[in-house]
Image (cartoon, rainbow, N blue to C red; front, side, top):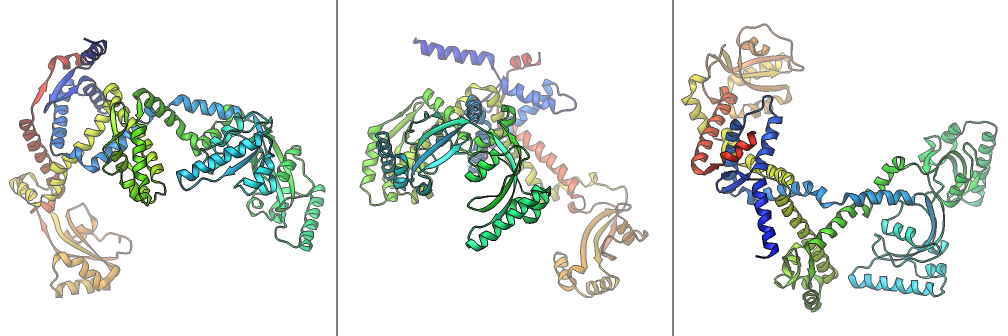
Amino acid sequence: MSAMAATAILSATAAKTTDPVVMTVNGKDIRQSEFEYLYQKNNLQQLAPQTLDEYVDIFVVYKLKVAEAEAAGLHLTDDFRKEFDSYCAELSKPYLSDSLVRKRLINEAYGRMSTSRKVSHIMLPIGATYDENEANRQRLDSIRNAIVNGADFGEMAVKYSSDRSALRNKGSMGYINANRYPYPFELAAYTTPVGEISQVIDDAPFGYHIIKVEDERPNPGKVEARHILKLTQGLSPEDAAVKKAQIDSIHTLLVNGADFEALARQESEDPGSAALGGRLGAFGPGEMVKEFEDTSFGLKDGEISKPFRTAYGYHIVQTLAHRGVGSLEDELQSIQTAINRDMRSSLPEKERLTQLKNSYGVKVDSTALMAVKARMAGSNDAASALDTAKDAGEVIATIGGKPITAAQVYESIPDNVKNGAKDAFTVFNQGLNHLIDETTVKITRERLAQENPEYRNIVNEYRDGILLFEISNRNVWERSTTDTEGLANYFAANRTKYTWDAPHYKGYVVFATSDSIAEAAKSYLASTSVEKDSLVSKLSKNFGRDIKLERVVTGKGENAIVDNVAFNGQRPEAPGKWVAWFSYDGRVINAPEEVADVRGAVTSDYQAELEQNWVSSLRKKYKVKINKGALKKISK
């Protein structure tokens, strides 16, 4: 016997010893861990805990109903699979995410906040096809090599960058801070040594980049400021001069002690901040135009600037406070917000997925994959090219021993992606990678259910709960409300159970918005033969919203209006606009005459009978075997 086989037998034996079967229902084993989990949960929900013997019977009935649901194929329906898979996806998230990665990303982000980096960049766009992307990436790599070999970065940015701001700034972005740019861009900006050029960044969301890191300095933090603005954009020189005179006058008022907030509300032409007394909140480097940023950071707390000009117009700024980088605790929320809005949010899952794929063993057959690509190359359009994989049975990858065929990859690609494809092999390759990831997740969930009792028990509880609800609804709850014949027969057979302590009025109460309308409605009903099923529609047609009809079966003393019309009671206060009312087609009865007179009570009792008969039939239909020895150990 091999060591591996011996280990497998020992593991299986250990599992049986530590988690024995406590009962078998319809050939399906229920282990001690599941039974104990549900028993303890049930007792936590009860005012008076149930004994083990009491709960065993409840549990058996529960599992019998699940067995019936499985026999009916409810676990195979699309609705079940959709709900169950969605729950498993949510429940398994903690097991498919590396919490250490999240912690590392937080510490990394906070560490970078202490410095600002001055960078320039060149960008080329993302292409429409795989081949275009490769061409752009290689082109940018060639541009990088030219710069490394002596070409001027700024000139190359002006000539080649798809970021057209390079025409005026030669690619310069000034000083940037952490947590403000896409993660791949930030990663390159903070890991490339000062004075050097990064490798091509090919996973940023807006294009391909190279970055030149020109300088590094301590992060000045943020300033909190307010301003007054006179707009000059689009104005003639003469009109701009008027704005300059206005801002100078405002500055004179401020120097002589005028209130900054009041003047900002009255004079500033920045509508967003004017209503706030000019307040802009706190901002850091790179968040405002350079002239505004330099002025704001250069002032002392409380100091007011002289008027200065930006592309927007003339400003006066008052710096209210300088704020350095706070502690990790202070900055944690903003860091987490930044992580959650970019690709870092998925890194804990991606890194865990990579770990899992490595542990399961992913193998891609490059020969088979290239054969798929060669077949696709013979088609005139992408959709037709993808169709060549529709029935292809060759295995192009395996993971954890599970094969993935070309046809499976084709089926996994959404139709809208197939129909909109421009490069068939790119779409197919992406589909393969996605299917490998999905298969990894599926294997992980299967293994969790096998190896993790806590996860397995929660999943089983949810699964069985869905099935229990559906099968109970079919056999008891829904049936008890829709089976009119069964309800009528049950009432007839048990009529003596349903009695009243006082007489009841059975009939209609007609409400009206005035006495005259009530009299008109009463005359209409007396002179016209109206079927009960059309009473509401007929009255509504003739009297509109001035009439309301209610069918009641109400005992004496239960309703003041019914007491008034049926039992000679005093007239009560009118309910809202309904100032008049009268009885129609009603009479006083001493006992229920039909199911409708006591529908709630009959339905509840009928449900109980259906439940009892159903459980009795299930006990006869399915075999139950109980391991009393294992259960006794639980009771101890």
